[in-house]
Amino acid sequence: MLRKVLHSKIHMATVTAARPDYVGSITIDRQLLRAIGLRASDAVEIANATNGERFETYVFLGGEGVIEVNGAAAQLVEPGDRLIIMHYALMDEAEYRAHRPRVALVGEGNALDRVIGYEPWP
Image (cartoon, rainbow, N blue to C red; front, side, top):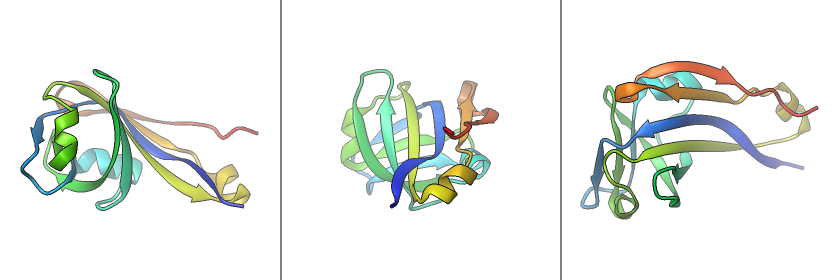
């Protein structure tokens, strides 16, 4: 059996732009993506910690400090909102036991503060 589990997360990134006229997605700083193994075109779930909205989209590669929400989802955020960006993966029991989700903790200007890992449940 495969289970949907957390693969990686970007915690408390700040929206730098909301572009409803742009082709849909979320554009994310490349350094943050590399730090946790998230890739362009990966599907992500977004939780807006500022207003409680949640939505799903996919990733575009961005420049330093960039967190831009594009397309229809741009209606759900404002520049300055804080986001939690979660990526899930389907894993069997052995993959789950070996996996350690990576979490990018984000500081001012969306700079990578540090990366932590979660231990799996026994």
